[in-house]
Image (cartoon, rainbow, N blue to C red; front, side):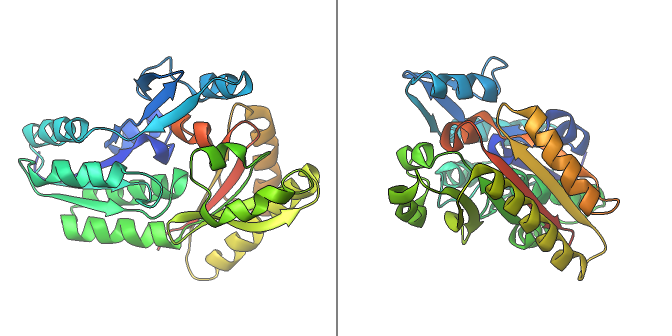
Length: 286
């Protein structure tokens, strides 16, 4: 089975069946609840479990995969006959996952190209899918990695959170910390820019924030559609499939025939954004 294997991590929030169909190997990050660490691949470690733990005030944190976990995956893919590997991961500014992959790549039995997507969630997931498609079409590792980088850079992510507290505790908000002082009187809309989570707008109520999130998705889609023939769209949520489905339906109605993928954020991302999150990813096929 000569060719390029594609690897990503669980924060890409790719539905398992979609990753399996694309032949993508997913490396799980770790969820730590009250000092007990388990990988996201553990079927009991669900986003809903994390959401409930946060609601109940348990101590919840996360950690990157070990280099050994990457090494084992790379060795297995090499044994399966792959010549090279492209490994795509969430922004190195938010996690040491990229560094762990790089360390494992140094001793891998086949060449491994590690790509910092500079983003997260389905913005990374869509990039990994694009890489897998290129690999399946016979592209070389360099071409696959370049396609991944183009898709990741072209993607736009906006999301709403009920509170910035979970992001603050996990050290993931960076400049968005400036919003904390007024978090009780406004609802923040955030984005991912230059590898970090940053504030985008402040809206007075949750209802207005969700309406604005929808408008941002529509306007970003329209801009992207002017320069490419197809744009992928995903709606993210945590433990609220009903709200996400309603939002996706409204969004889809405004985007003509475009399919909107609804995907729950991974358990690790859930630990940082908390219950109530709703997000939209616009990823043009470039």
